Length: 216
Ligand SMILES: Cc1cc2nc3c(=O)[nH]c(=O)nc-3n(C[C@H](O)[C@H](O)[C@H](O)COP(=O)(O)OP(=O)(O)OC[C@H]3O[C@@H](n4cnc5c(N)ncnc54)[C@H](O)[C@@H]3O)c2cc1C
Image (cartoon, rainbow, N blue to C red; front, side):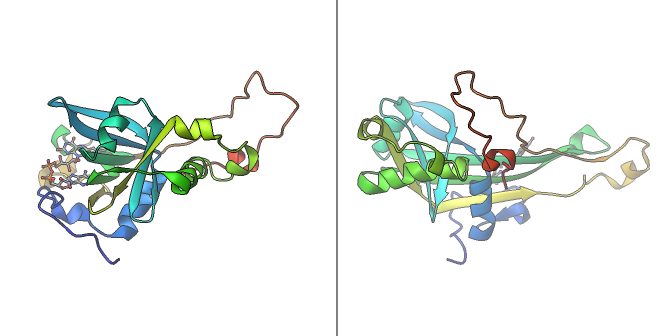
């Protein structure tokens, strides 16, 4: 696929030059981000819930407890809006008005469907591998009971847009002579020092995939 379609819902009104419908832009954002925010309306109340997600092909998947209110609601095909945000930096301009953020974000409009059978097992394994690549080989496989306690919902990437801001502040021409420092403070998600489980038995070595963990 060369581009996702721009639809009345996904057409950018503000700063459309920052928008993209290109899978080559959208997929890496979805893959780098660990967390998405799922918006839906339940009993006429808008609600936005953060959760982990993964992408596979032209779909995004979320998962969780079978009794989750959100998942039960979305399993019935209720419309959702899923957003993913990577905050890349703070943009410090010479006026408050022009302060901004550098970011890569995605907005998805979709109705989801529950994933069942072998595909569900495969997607749950992919969850582990997507969040911590290499992890699956070190842990015990999921049980039927755990599978039954878990709901997986897939959302097609039919109506989807990305928006990206990068680069320095854009100030008013007369403000460039002001003495204030201006520029970008880069921000990124970085792992801290691993903290061993106090109940760890034996002395399993810290896996290489933890030592070298990074996103993006
Ligand atoms: C970290 C971060 C900080 C931001 N801070 C601000 C801020 O302080 N003030 C501000 O006004 N805006 C901010 N934005 C931009 C904001 O997300 C909106 O794009 C902007 O406010 C325009 O909103 P709108 O409703 O007019 O969008 P419109 O352009 O009218 O939205 C139409 C469609 O364009 C697409 N779209 C819009 N925004 C995005 C997006 N960010 N990512 C992917 N698709 C999108 C969606 O499909 C949406 O349905 C920020 C974005 C990020 C990621």
